[in-house]
Image (cartoon, rainbow over the protein chains, first blue to last red):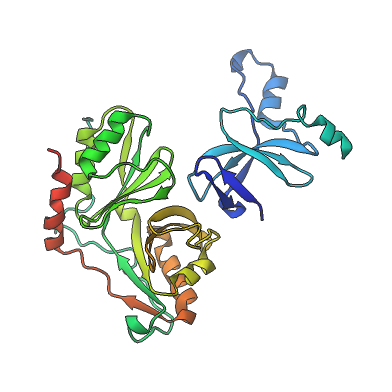
Length: 103
Length: 232
């Protein structure tokens, strides 16, 4: 079981309390009418599925019922950080590219 | 003050009130008395439950709640603000959500008082009919909770006074530690008889006793009436 730090409750909770909600930082096109079908389709349906570092949206379903983001390694399952929606991750692929290449 | 039609969900005397556990049956061997039991289960039915939403950064909002309830709004997960003598408590549920529990029959007045005192972007919802409180007392309650929830109930992680919500018996519950050996569960109506059966089944090995529920008497209502009108 993962032990996940909820940035709203400010403590570690069991994975059982949370629900994963897929890729984080998906911005809705500002002008849907002016967006091409391909871009709209990409926005709605296409998600990254990287091997390694991934930013995900999670939901604290049994606790504070707030959404927040997790930077997680999809290979090792290691959680690098959790942060609130609206904030930017401090651990990114660019920041740890040397580490990623070593794997 | 908001222009809003407010309904008294439990008008005094007009309709018969039934606890969510009114139909629950006990299918385990009970201890012969509370003294022999490791866990004593007692329902506290008909309490007033209000869900309050609002901006914790707003000083006027915090001040309004404090004027009505006489308790400061908790601003983070941790101790439940509680006045045992008046039977009023406020629990932090989320950065913009609180659970207010007031004595039976007082929820209508408490909600009206909050609506009088608060303004702007906030919400108060009377959820009294949707949930109930179970009180668990006894030396084995902590062991019972360890069987029910993944949350760490060790005093290190769960000191007296704290209140959280977590997974409980495949469902969910609000868990509050009132005293060393006294805990409260706030459970949903739709889960009430399931959780009640689960708790009795899980507590059977420790010796479990079901104490009669506290009657929501009219005398009690009169005493606590003072709380809601405080500040007017």
